[in-house]
Image 1 (tube, rainbow, N blue to C red):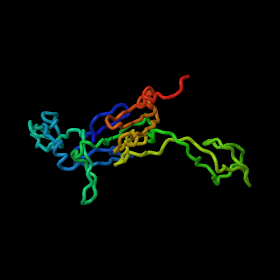
Image 2 (image 1 turned 135 degrees about the vertical axis):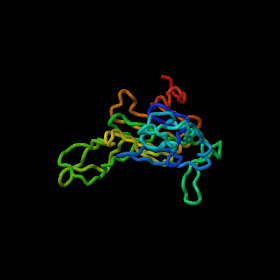
Image 3 (image 1 turned 90 degrees about the vertical axis):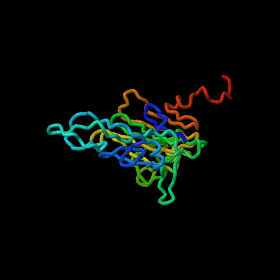
Image 4 (image 1 turned 60 degrees about the horizontal axis):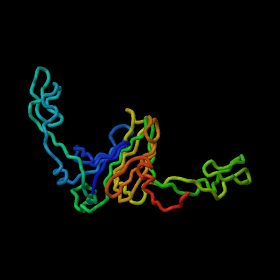
Length: 274
């Protein structure tokens, strides 16, 4: 199956591999009020993606430590400090473009492995859609549905006559005031995840050093053909869209506003002439 990374503004046809402490997909981030989850790669699969490249610290600035923290090469003394020798290599990994998911027999651990079925038209999606500045995100389905008002038949007694701010139904007289009748509906978005979407793991990224200036959930999803979801973004957006819709068609992953993902011109043209 194909692999994608989707952000607030673009879709990338691959997922980046993080190398330490073992090859994995990083979902979220480390830090205060943040959550990092690691989705591991099978060893043979990660080895097939790995290659050795020269250490980027070669011939760099002087360091205090006697060995390189990246490649482990011993430093060459230079006065009171050390200089990186013209040697040393690090392991880097190619981004994952296609894969399969394996559940091990020993512990039932989920691992990413090389693609076993090229006809699998599901998609593995790393959804990293950020909130606005000092904002948050809310995940829903893409359709709105009529639901019973959550205050229906509630035990709360109101001392004033009025109507429910959620559904608009008038309160009814009760012994000590007014109560909400067992009636009324609200329009709300479908609950996430909807049919065709499986959450493999999720983490959290935050804004600010203390992680209290806003943030957003990051999810690793398995999406069936035709599956879609919506992310509502709050905070200072600076003109960016407040809603992001994502649709897996079975061939490509689409990102945009509702009209960009489902253009009106593609609707069935059966209807009435006016």
